[in-house]
Structures are given as C-alpha cells and as structure tokens.
Image (tube, rainbow, N blue to C red):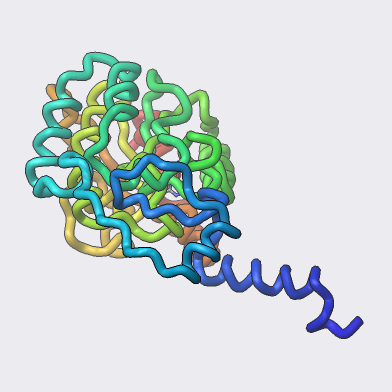
Length: 274
Ligand code: URA
C-alpha cells in the first residue's frame, strides 16, 4: 500500500505533527471551553459536527470566577500570600494549594505536582513547572529531566530521600510553555512558604525561571549559575545556589560540565568544606 494511503502511517504522521506543534496531551474526548462557567458535559464529536453545521448562536461567555482571572493579578497574589501564610505544615500547604483557584493553570492541569523527596532533607531543589509526565503523575521531575536530575544528584552521593523537590509553579502550563510572570507572581507565595516549612539548609534553583523568581536576579542563568546567594526563609537564612536546568542540559549536553562544577560546589558546602 502506498505510504500516503496507509491509515496507520497517516495517523502516525498526524500525531507527529501534533507533538511537534506542542500538542502532546489530550485533556478530554472533545474540545471544552474552559473559560466559560459551564459545567455541562462536552459535546461529543459527532454531535459537535452537526451543531457546527446548524450554526447555533454562540454561547454567552460567562465571566471567569473572580479568583480565577477577573481579579487583578496583584489582588490574587495577595490572596495567595495570605493563604500560604496560614499554612503551619507542608501538608496544610498542599491542601490549601489544592483548593486554591486563583491560578488558571490548575484548570488545564490534570494534577497538582506539589513535591517529591524528603521535606526533612538538607537540600531543596526548585525547578520551573511540571511537564506532561509530572502532570500525569502529580510529582515534580518525573520525566527525562527528572531522570537526569537523579543522575546529577547521584554523582554527588545524593538520592531523592536526601533532597526535597518542588517547582515555582505547581501546575503544568499547557503545551509546556513557560509560566507567565503573572502565574509566577500568583504561585510564588506558595513556593516561598514551602521552602520556609521545609528543613532545607541549602536551596538549589535549577534554571532561570526559579533563579529569577526566588533569588530576585534579572541576569540570565548562564551568567548567574555557580553563584551563591543568601535566601531568607522565614526567620532562617539559608544558602542558595543557582544552576542550569536539567532540561536545558538534555538539549545542550556540553554544558553539563558547568552543572557538574555547581554540584561539586554543593557537595563541598554540604560537607562544610571551602
Ligand atoms: N521541569 C521542571 O522545571 N520541573 C519539573 O517538575 C519537570 C521538568
């Protein structure tokens, strides 16, 4: 059968096209307008085709719930700050985040990816945002970048029982786009509280997004990596290190030598060596 008539090959080519275009996850059987306040079941595809042919009047768009988008980002971030402050434990913080509707990402994500590892560990690692694997599993750094992170940790004698892992944004941005500045601003109080409530003595920001969000630097990560900062975690001052993101290292393997330098510096700091 010629290639272009083979239904399997045609389907595969279509799927490849979707993946290349960034459509790498199916959220539902049928398209759903998540910006309406409408909780009816989505229209099944066949019915949707008929409906399209008949051209019904466009549904009236409902305003977003006030906490989801209509409220100014500053007000939502302030609300997030108050909620985060109220958490006395990491379990409470996770519950508060799970109930928080101020970040629109939670409506397209499958799961909250709150944390992995050991909250009593001396090292806390903070990345950017969950990807497809993390969204499916509900934990940070589960995919290829996470596997590389595990190998980097193993190289300095650490595993996931000896680190605590989270992201600045705990819900997957659709299509793995970068979180917007507003999304980061809204989620920042939660990750700051998560760091405060952990036992971490060392914070490792992997990638530019978490470095900029938590360490307040404007420079890019290639300029900032390897630098140590003082981070105020509630009443404690902890040491923070900026380094390259494992997803970047998967694309630029030659840069692993720089990350290796940073991880060795972390090892020395853990051992109390200069
Ligand atoms: N990249 C991140 O920054 N975080 C994850 O959890 C996975 C990939």
